[in-house]
Image (cartoon, rainbow, N blue to C red; front, side):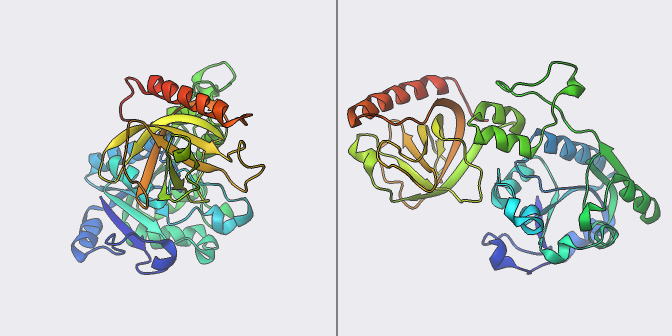
Length: 349
């Protein structure tokens, strides 16, 4: 998969472009895009959930049929962080993880647009002319039927169809994927009455601690990642050392509680882990934010300063305040046993 940051070189430090990722496309690839054209789908793609992958699969199938490249247009930050920063959503995936998921989906090209106030104020027709036609040589565009873009969300499927008829590309607006999630209360009825799969809905499930429901809509376990920092070492003192993940405040963590999951190390190994998300109420009367602490089962070693990744499989219980350290330790022993049972037979997802 080729990743191109557009405009090339603009705002690299601010965007946090990964070392070696590159910002532009070599002339041979630009020539291939111009020669073959692309089938494009557009969006924030936060989470790259099963609804997003339905769009991507349709774009890839169309590209295969006409001999074009499949392309995703996405953004270096969530557009809401620019358009309405006070109410911008927390993220299910950071940019690097999103790109890895798009690559796994089989996309040929991802164009990462630098999103700023100028881009937010851009007329929809100008975006089409500059990006879809001018850069990507679009032969077809595949989007959700309710897709909006451009200044004041003025762009939609009918606008794309009008401009496409004039500029030479086809437009397909497909219905949103609808699905129930395990444990989620939805009205009974035919499939079309089920709620649409959306990043907003998945964020709510994660915030409520329903990681199983979120996984059903993501098509994989919800993932948290961060550098392992030096905490207060209280877990080690209790006999349950933990890796304290410094998860970005921009990310959607799950509701306070204890979870069973898999801890993934940079060397590719993975370990069963009991994960505590919370504010340590047994020891502190208040904390400004929740901590993510992972106790790796049957592991001894130094994890400090490495990037730790946790895939959350099941919620075991809510956060509790214990009357004594001994009661907390007894519960932690139970949590470890429950983690082993929850992960028995659970493979990668």
